[in-house]
Image (tube, rainbow, N blue to C red; front, side):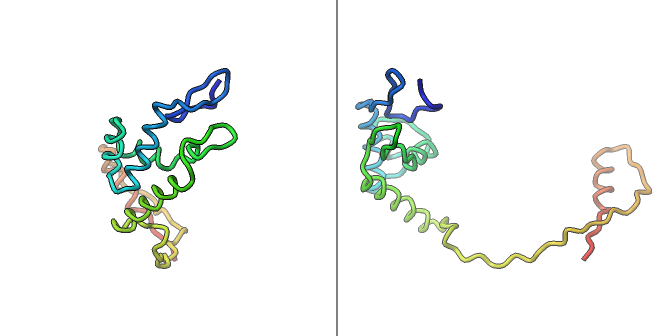
Length: 140
């Protein structure tokens, strides 16, 4: 009996999660190769797997591989941290480090609107919608 989706690298016997060593070795290779500089797809290819970049990213961010109350560990904390540091470094180099950027204050938009009374009717539903939307006025 499994709890939802079983992460790649594990198998179940009598409701207990065990490491599938052949798959676990592929997971370890993905972490090692990515941390050493290969791309997401390159790391998967080095592990003998054909995956999308988003699948590899999910593998690299899956904390079950560190071990928990349900899954035995496939990798150690040092390996996980090395891959995570590499991922964050790459995000920063590409300008995608959204969390650390200082955000400019956003001007509060008016939340009070008034709808003028419609005086025209159009047979074309798109033209009618356009007309109705043009009657909306912001207050404030």
